[in-house]
Length: 203
Image (tube, rainbow, N blue to C red; front, side, top):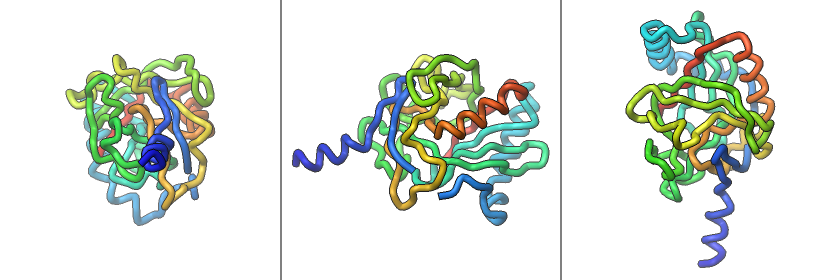
């Protein structure tokens, strides 16, 4: 029993900003995978136009995908194409989620869960994890309105690799979407010129 408990706890790393474990291919997704996201991309485009957010670039997270596969996507909104894909951690929900898939989501403080919905990538700030900087996230829907007060932020951690780890899952966070150091640096470069960029999480 003690061994089982240790094995479970060892998959969970902390996020307040957040921390975790992991990670075959941080390349463009296969051509045939792109059309399945046209619905989501069109929704982001509509939301950004209606609310005066960035209409060139957005980020999506598809939490229906195994955590050892790329499910963090940088999207070219104008051409409706995925530019880059990467690994990203999901929240443990205090054990309600398995490390392989995110099945439970919450907007409640101290739930340690990921949230679904549209959010705005906010200001860059210091982080104790990874590259030592993070981006605040502001939830724009009822499902994720408490992201800032919960300190659910976009940050990096050394344990997230730049290649897929499937079938091995990533370790889990306390709710933060956590990506590799390299991927966060790429996002950081984009956000130096692109402002008011949306992050849309769905399942």
